[in-house]
Length: 342
Image 1 (cartoon, rainbow, N blue to C red):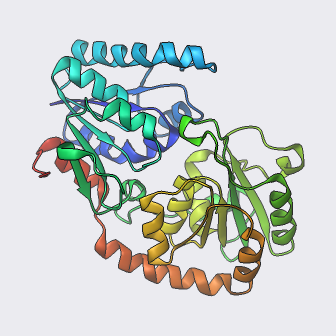
Image 2: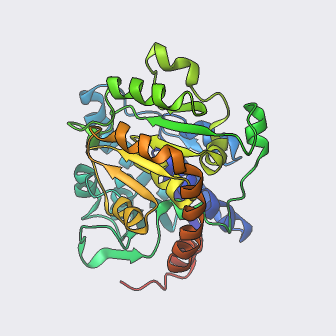
């Protein structure tokens, strides 16, 4: 068997990295393709995953429109050249390529509001794979599983926290610190949406500063006044920080979910919502806000009992894991055996 895994975002590296190594253990040929998006290439290099770079889509609307079919055609060419049997990705590109090559493709998604992307892959993919909590039905091709993308790499079968990461930042395991995540708002499905205002970012930092250290993760340049809080370690160590931090507050759904499945109190602030986020709210692992009006009050109320909340969350996570799948094992079975029914 020969497999192609297409990467279009740093989160996709995490989603598929364990699958990549599981396939390689079985001597499966795996070609990884990646477009230039934030730190995706850096992550692949840090994880020692060879890749073929496809460049970027460009920064203008015109360049992105031109590159959409070109990238799909290039994936098709690679699938033909390397005699690929199965293509995987959170990507419409693999669906277009498989439509042209008549090979098999599995498109993974967990974001209902990414309507443009859904439209681009829906009619071409062999199978569309989503968490059970995905709120849209995508027809006869749609496969649902119990789990979240984040459990492909943060399930206890794969993730082991490393306290050494804290030492790189001069932190101790018992020390209180907070992780904040600010997003770039440049994705197509982010248009017209918002998270935390600059005023509330200031209020949040003022509130948290006396309680512990603040670490900010951001995709792009952040306001100069916040620069001193920017995360200064390798992004591959981010999940260690999320595991050990006292509280996560951010605009990014992926990192909010990562914090939740690790048992860290998590507050997500974004006008966009998703079924996977709602499921974590139902578990009691996530506070999800459509705007930042009540953010400061909510965080202020959490702070006095944040350690107790974290202990309780860890117990909830154990229960949650009993009900959810090891997503990498699920994907491996899907690719190798194709015994997952629709």
